[in-house]
Amino acid sequence: MEATRIELEAKDIPTHWYNVVADMPTPPAPPLGPDGKPATPEQMGAIFPGAILEQEMSAQRWIEIPQEVREIYRLWRPSPLVRAVRLERALGTPAKIFFKYEGVSPAGSHKPNSAVPQAYYNKQAGIKRLSTETGAGQWGSSIAFAGQMFGLDVRVYMVKVSYDQKPYRRLMMQTWGAEVFASPSPLTETGRRLLAENPDNEGSLGIAISEAVEEAASRADTNYTLGSVLNHVVLHQSIIGLEAKKQFDKIGLYPDLVIGPCGGGSSFAGIAFPFLADKASGDKRAEKLRCIAVEPSSCPTLTKGQFAYDYGDASGFTPLMKMYTLGHDFMPPGIHAGGLRYHGDSPLVSQLFHDGLIEAVAVPQLATFDAGVQFARAEGIIPAPESCHAIRAAIDEALRCKETGEAKTILFNLTGHGHFDMSSYERYFAGKLENYDYPADAVAASLAHLPKPG
Ligand SMILES: *Cc1c(COP(=O)(O)O)cnc(C)c1O
Image (cartoon, rainbow, N blue to C red; front, side):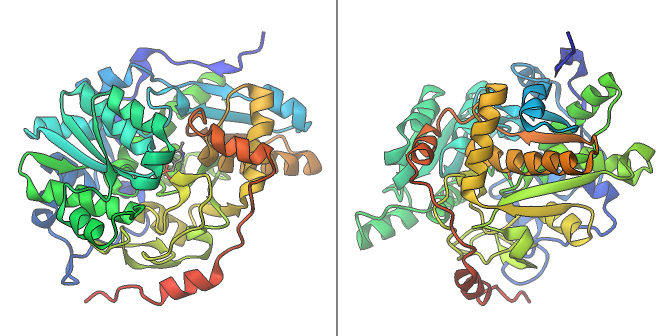
């Protein structure tokens, strides 16, 4: 029987994360504070521990993964690399399609790869409690799990509509011992003010971030955690690509294409950057490698955004980051891939895209569910709506190979399973899902308010 699932052993879990900053032709622009000057570690120290800040600013190529973190990674890592032979057959393509499956983590996605080290470094720094926000609940559940592993209290501000509509993600967090509050909540200044104005406020990610940051900034024993975008999150996610490289080595193959969904960019960076390292070091196998970030056509940050300084949150609390952005007050249409509804993108992904080292495509919602269902029926795994974006692009590339007769090796990141997203599939099957056009007017309006630093 041909090996279609390429396994590694516990001893193969990487000992170091890879930091792409060491290999970037243009170093990333620094984040700026409210005064337009580079943000100082002191400004950010109120909500992050020193070890995380150090990683955030580091240009060191390899950063050691603490033993305690590797032991928890061991609960689900190394994650499998699978050759999708049944999907290849269904498509009739000469391409070889592989996926790296991150849905095997306790929370069901790649997000615990960063939640675990974030909880660890906070514990080391003497922090007792973590605060965070969550929209659909994927990051909240990852940090609830990670906090529990290190005995930290976790408080999650969950956007009110999701709190009411997604009880199972909320219950997952509560099962891992986290406290979950509908945001806006009566626990913070921001929440109390908004509730006084309108007791029926349904909340937004921007409001939930404000509440979580306010709590962390106002209490010495509490820090804030973020699930994507920032450099340290990108660093932690490199474990995905590092393992994938070992798995390809095992079978003597090397990908021509590396594809991942892109919201804040951390999982795409995680699978792609370790391969870019080969390009940077002149490895012949990586000469023709292409890395493709896949985003929704309704929230096309890389393909239609501007490369400019902008806030990371809707309310303008965070430092300014140089990134591709649709404008911090752009409100994306309500697509079902909640994890891809972000106005900005990781500054590292942005800079590399700007320099032409990676590519991006945008795909419409219905086509992503078509791809997700085709994948589920061939390979069994029901993908998260975010992951369906990568599957769409991988299938499109495989079909192109069918036309040209090229037998390319395609790798995509299956970032999570869709077991908590079945109501989205229900709408798809009922013919109720729609394609949203690119909201050109809303983007133009939002880009007109980009902050002008300095
Ligand atoms: C959060 C999420 C994403 C998108 O976030 P990135 O930071 O861009 O990786 C993709 N897939 C799943 C399953 C997610 O939960």
